[in-house]
Length: 257
Length: 259
Image 1 (cartoon, rainbow over the protein chains, first blue to last red):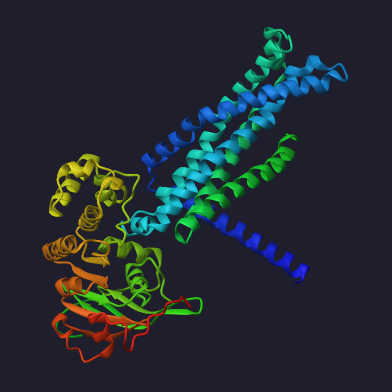
Image 2 (image 1 turned 90 degrees about the horizontal axis):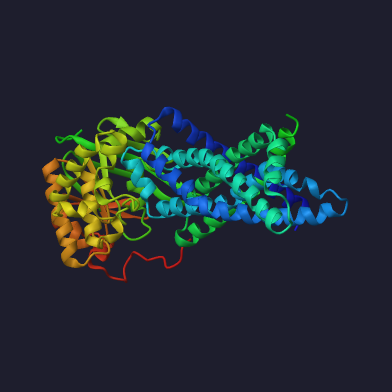
């Protein structure tokens, strides 16, 4: 086997796949403009993705914040900088860990669910049936999910930010003997709007990518139960990779603002 | 053109998936208000043919003339034209399992025509009655229905917007003989009441005899015989004879493996 040929083929395949995904995104975006807008489908997706993800996102955030406080305390002791603990916890949660951990949890919960649901609809001819009933599946199934996730994820991240900082607070105050009011005051004075907003912008992009991957791999799944299984797996992996990769590039753009 | 009006006029229809030629030049005419049944074994191309006619699959070449309009270029306007005119009963019923039965039946009214929910529900309950189901069924979820009830609901959904052409994909597959006959009767009754043109694909010979005005047999992507149901027994065509009587031995060799 020729390693150059293999590398070339894999690269071409990857680029072609990204092109297909972009086309899919454009088609679903177009269906939002040409209408009709399915508000019921939107709200049901919004509740399932946003509201139902609250417990798991909250749990992730509180433990992340708590562990972060312990680690930073241990690390900063080495150069007597432990008094900066609240600021470091705050900025890490708001800029990085809140958006990324919430997005990864939502990817596990929702990209998989979307791929499996839409994939099963494809396998049982429900998507064909929808077209024969004069309803565009891109408009009814895909666009509402993408829109709902893009809006829901920043709201979830806002909650995750607060709970994550609270997790750090619990550890700092009850295990490390920090003063509670001082902890809050330090974070309040240190954090800037742009810290929070950059995290929320990232979250919106993550939400878009999660739903796009879930819908794309579900929509083009084939081959019955096994096909649905493999498209679910691909959707979760692809959205996790997309989140982490886009996170780096967005961060490098957003720190310059 | 012959004396009766042609509703569906197909010439030289071809479709291949990769190297696998599924349809190899189909010629088919269906007259307005008639019921055409296409018989043929698994893998003969029946489902692909019906999906081409329905505008779900784009054919490679050929003409599909529906009421004077050629839809074979498969543009989105063609698809809209076809979906307005037609209804389809899918083999596995293809009900939307996230919606209650009545929203399934009224799906087009609710989401394509934007009718108010109350009026749409009334229409759905009317359609349920037409297929012999009580109004309470409307509030059930599709997963709570038996196979026969699913077929009835799917039929109700297909007729809810008074289509001119109805497609039936193996309407009796997976049903017991009695339920199959009930579905056959419902199909006959509803198609007649609408005055619609019907195209069915099936390999259930009892069903074919009952609902067909005309029968065509598809084998290896071509129509090899057509005639009236009563001519089917003595068609003089050995392949039709083998299929109708369900013999393993004969000119048709079933492929056990996929190519």
